[in-house]
Length: 191
Image 1 (cartoon, rainbow, N blue to C red):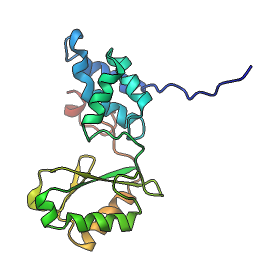
Image 2 (cartoon, helix red, strand yellow):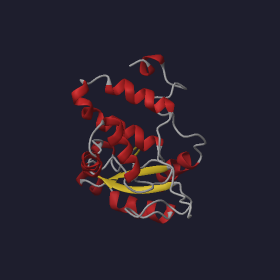
Image 3 (tube, rainbow, N blue to C red):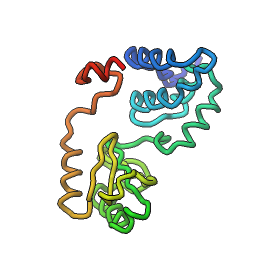
Image 4 (cartoon, rainbow, N blue to C red):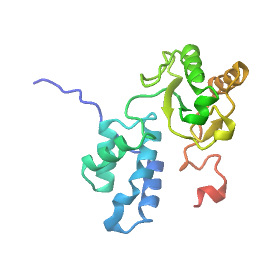
């Protein structure tokens, strides 16, 4: 008899399950699907920064919806990564004001320095993924890159680009996830 070494089905951590339950309680039971966006964010954070098909299936199971409903949402919104990503996803604004201030040159420089290519997955060292995005609403500080919740602005000099990359390379710990108690102010943790 042949043994099957199928990968283990993904499961949420206990902390993530508790946060998902908290979020789902904000909606009527028949509207549990309304929690899909925050649950996909939790899934992306829990499973390496991207939502593989089996993770999307887990989200569907947790919310009691068909997998296709999760696939429709995850493929529509660019904030969800459908392929493996590096430790830091650099979202480069590519709209008019940023282009006028050098976002195309910034993208080329980031590709050169990191070795990552826009749309092609993480850099060889696993640190960086480059992604072009629409307006980040920081036109007055162009060109702009967003990494998680932080904006890096006026990246129009070699020094500013190197400072951003140095900060990211030297980040020892991953940022705390929103549902983790460690490091969160009580006001945030209790909302």
